[in-house]
Structures are given as structure tokens and as C-alpha cells.
Amino acid sequence: MRHCLLFAALLAAPAMAQYNGPESVEYDPAGDRYFVSNTSSGMIKVRNQAGAVSDFVSVSPSPYGLELMGDVVYACSGGTIKGYALSNAAQVFNLNLGATFLNGITTDGEYIYATDFNSSQRKVYKVDVAANSASVLVANTGGQPNGIVWDPIGDRL
Image: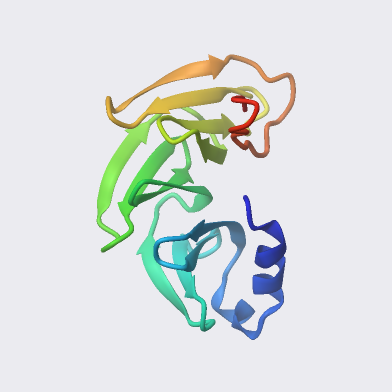
């Protein structure tokens, strides 16, 4: 979410043919690379600074929102949050929230927050990765939450 302009540039680049339904991009500062979720192929791709794009991991259902926390990239996948180790793409987290369509995802560094875009759910979930649990933070947003971002200065979503 922090690199929206760069994402637009990524989409305009010749490597666009390597993407199939790009939805979300997340920058990995430690690896100096970008993760891109592809909803049509069910693949999270990785793009290095030289522009090379490769498959990182296949996700089913297809990945939507992405967020890095620590050494894991988390993906919204249907009603589930899945996590994959940055080092080898091994799945290290899998928690079904009972949601319908998780789309937006962010972190405050301790918890993950995810939005359920479904018109009947409209919830915001708080995920405690360490405890492998989740709770409903907002029961009804009053609209379809399409994204979410953590504001560290204001200490708020």
C-alpha cells in the first residue's frame, strides 16, 4: 500500500505480461523486492529491482491483499489469512476467519487487520498471529471496506 505509484509503474512495465490479474503489491525492504498478488492465476509473484518477475507461491483461493510482518508475507485468500516465509515461500500461517471475501490487510507490527469486502459481512478483523486467533474489531463498517492502512503516527486504522 505504501508504494502505490511504483505499483502503477510496475503495471506499465514490459513485465506486465507476466502478471495475471494483479491486485496488491507489497515492498520487502530486506529483500529489496516487490510481491504482487495475481487473482487470475492464484499466484504471488516477486519482482526484483532488475525487473525480473518470478513465481513466489501458488495460493488457493486466489490471493488479494498482501502485507509483510516480520519475515512473513500474509495474503487474504477467501475467508482465510495465509502466511508464507519470505526466505522459502513455505506456508507458516493459515487461519480461517469465517469471513466471506477478505480483501484489505495491514499491520501495526503486532497484529494484522483485515477487511471483509462482502456486502453482508462488512467487518474488520484483528488477527493475533502469535496466538493463532482472530476477533471482530468492527462488526459492520457501514460500507464495503476495500482496503485498510495502519497510521502509526495517529495510532489508528
